[in-house]
Image (cartoon, rainbow, N blue to C red; front, side, top):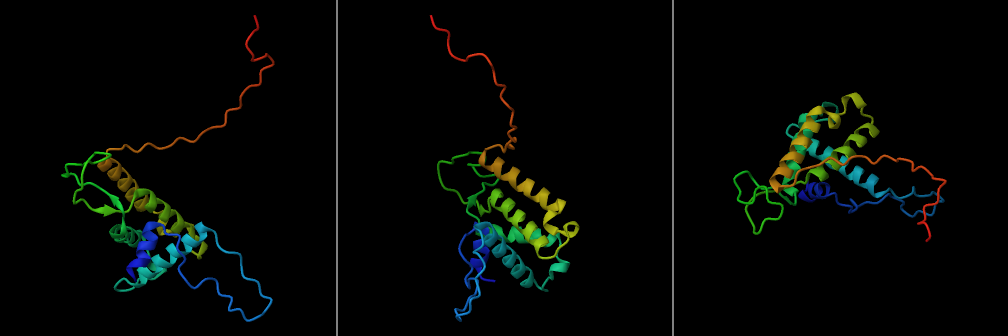
Length: 184
């Protein structure tokens, strides 16, 4: 597997994987399918990259034998293509949101990128014939790993993660009274 493939998936690249959708221009009235959305294109690239990762294992792993351990190994593999500085516990900049200088701490995948990747792969698994109850991307171990990555990255940057609350639509009562100021 080329390192660019892993880099594309790690960065959430929107670059096309090449090849296009065929259509050799043979003069038939055959219509090309509409182009895929950015999300669908990315999901397809992610799925193909994960499949290539499994084939490159020694011995190769089939999708039927894939489990959460393989997914975790894939996520750790992707860290080498990360662009997010994650300060180590002993670093003088650990816990500082905006460190004043450079350090030798590693670059890793950002939690948000990994979370989005798992969401796309989880959907792709089921779209490609996998059963929801055997989906390795929906495993509890994956959720725990993502939570640990999120928490450790937030701690290393000194920025606590706060889950956003969903806004509820509260209807505003219409009043029969005039809302204008009384005139004097």
